[in-house]
Image (cartoon, rainbow, N blue to C red):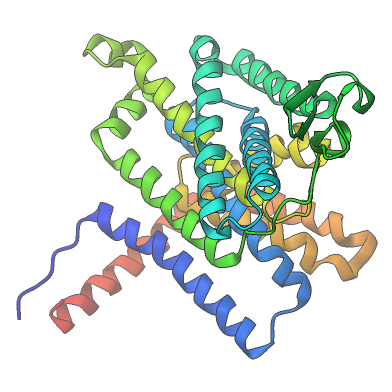
Length: 361
């Protein structure tokens, strides 16, 4: 029997995508049998969203090696542009196909987030370290605050804008607000679903893993390891930095689209698009392993579910959550833990190779 040779890159890709598929099947079985609580059902779409955010940020922080704290800002751009489009289509074409409308909103949200990634990346990527983190953080705060002062209405005569108050938006009696300052966008269609979230997560994984394993990915990692050496061998540092940053921003916009269409009201609050959100996404990346796509995805799922699983413990919930964070950090970065993990991985590989040889695979 002819043996099938699988490259290490393809094997890692199949394992990562296989984890997502297995998770999806388990959740679907629990849903069909009625064994999934309403709380867990409500977390299915956010789990996909946070996993996409963690994977996309890992492209900038782990693969490119640049610290960005503006990921929530790109998510905000994707969320509001897509929700704005969906709300507008519901007004002007109420009978428009919902699936096609969501697909167009997804493209618009992703494209606008990518566009902002280019506009921000061109001047910002000249900076390094703390300076880059501060500037990207400022961008996220600017976007959030801009959404809170923006009023856009629509009537028969077209769009009406204001940055002061709703009273300054002059519309006739048929007019309707698309964005109403701090109240955000209300009446967004709930087009997001767990199936769509899983599909978008798989697409994100395939795009980023293929990018990392390609010639482009090797160039980006060369820049991360030594910018001067990479530039000396002819690598266009600006081009590849901007490419990684833009793709990361676009994927954050995709997560924003998923988020916006999972709510009936979209508002730009500190808890969903502020500094804390950017830090939380960065925590997913660090605890999952900087540069590890699979690790950041798993960390995002675990750390999203953990506070909900511990909710019954009330006052001790966040204490246990903090302890788990410390243990995960030690497991990922402590030298003894790394040595133990490498030994266990080697043993598993030996057993797997023996099994494949025995079965003739």
